[in-house]
Image 1 (cartoon, rainbow, N blue to C red):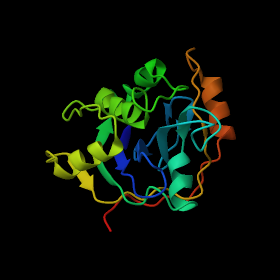
Image 2 (cartoon, rainbow, N blue to C red; image 1 turned 90 degrees about the vertical axis):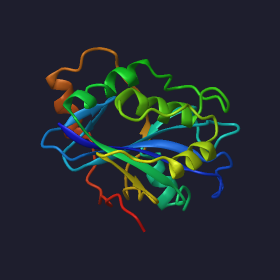
Image 3 (tube, helix red, strand yellow; image 1 turned 60 degrees about the vertical axis):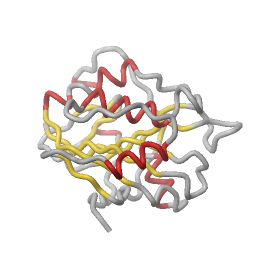
Image 4 (cartoon, rainbow, N blue to C red; image 1 turned 180 degrees about the vertical axis):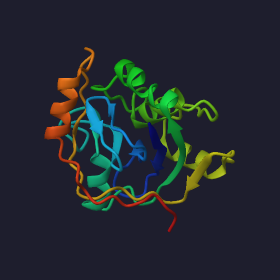
Length: 203
């Protein structure tokens, strides 16, 4: 297994008054793997981020969503000012994804103690060993830190990360039971993820 694992953050400049941080994963290997209950197939990409629900937030429920950043950027023109850092990860690191998601608070949100930064930075720190980030409360703080941070060999920093287009978004849910082959086949048959993928890159 092989994937590009990216931490992305957008500051407060586009209508989301507190900014936003999220994780983006692209499968660049030759086999599918699970991210929560989402089967990420070869050459496909997903995003994961935590959002505030109603009545204060823009979305119906508190918690983690798949691919909502794609809609925010492409349909509503938000999150376009951003910065990202990525690393190519392999089997040992990919295997850390499910344990983090199983233990993360995925259906809650608190602006100060349990927001998008807590989820995204926690996710990064759980998977990546070489660079650990302080859990900033405000996305602008993480944004400024990423601008200044020096990237060691094996990492790449982006001054702008483009989201995939035409992605389906849904709430994140995970079943703690062992996923068997029948479940994997059902996910593969039912998941519509044939969207056009824009490569990460500088503009």
